[in-house]
Amino acid sequence: MNIYNLIDDICQGYTPTKEEVEALLCTYEPYNSYLFSAAQAITKKYHDNIIHIRGIIEFSNYCRCSCAYCGLNAANKKLKRYRMEPKEIVETAKEAYDAGYRTLVLQSGEDLWYTREKISEIIKGIKSIGDIAITLSVGERDYEDYKQWRKDGADRFLLKHETINENLYNKLHTHSNLENRIRCLNNLKELGYQVGDGFMVGLPGQTLGDIAEDILFLNRLDVDMAGIGPFIPHPHTELKSAEAGSNEMTIKAVAITRLILKKVHLPATTALWTLNTEDGKKAFDSGANVVMLKVEPYKYRRLYEIYPKNLGNENSIKQERLRMEELILSLGKQVAQDRGDSIKFLEGQ
Ligand code: 5AD
Image (cartoon, rainbow, N blue to C red; front, side, top):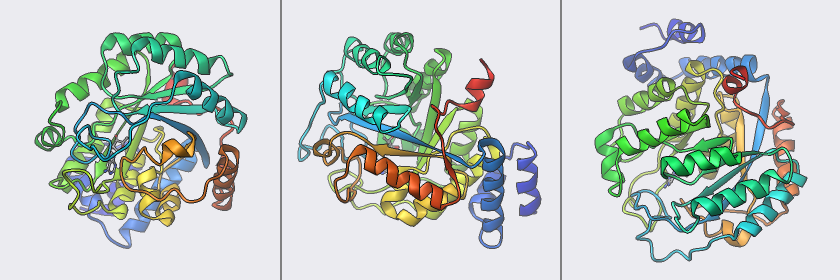
């Protein structure tokens, strides 16, 4: 297999097989550099070197699930739990809007305290502030919930498939199963959400073949956004002694995803930055065009511990955004001023 030709063919629109994606995941120099430059060229062509900064409000760390990798899992009794009131969420959104954010991600554990009506109230409250795209990330809920929130004005939804290896998925998520997750993703698409999927790299038991299948699944689902991050062990989970995923493999997965899904929005995920800041930046030169910054008050940020992380010094929402803008400019890229809707979605309108 000639790796250079394969990369060129994918850039021209060829969809690789699982074996071909696996071969790309295994590459070393000088092929790696060729892969990263090809991914960067596609990003420039379709996204014009513009990076989108999204604000994320992590509004509750209560969770009914027992995901084996996640620090918010219901069995973790060591974690102090919090919920932000709808009013406080809307106030945070206003501060983020004033700091320049035009997309806000509302994320939480799977917390049914936020009923359909409460989430509706939050969506309407935020929409009344100004032209802000709302991305929900609240997990698996009923079709009718998703339908109502879409009607209320929610634009996008993030729900990662985490791993497409069904045995592994079902082992890591004893409270649910992969079939249900995919049903939710299909429901969200049908309801007209811009859909964000994604997966983790380096889960214990995951093979390179699985990662190849993960990437090809994103293509089959024809997603608008995809978050790919390394697995990071958390001390209060079943997987506490497992090894962390590799940032290099994660960045390769991002680059290959960019070659295949040219128009998709791909974040340099927070998990990448957590393991190594330089790798966060490197992702912007390998296909990523989005970054998410936390905007909820620090007293909550400290408790939203999906995986261990260092939050650094406290700064205002505005200062933190400015610092990210400077970093993006220093990398020779620009900062998006618009809502950053999915290209595929805009073309369909
Ligand atoms: N390491 C890395 N990513 C994790 N996530 C949850 N737990 C971990 C972990 N230990 C990711 C999942 C989830 C997103 C909110 O965070 O992909 O979808």
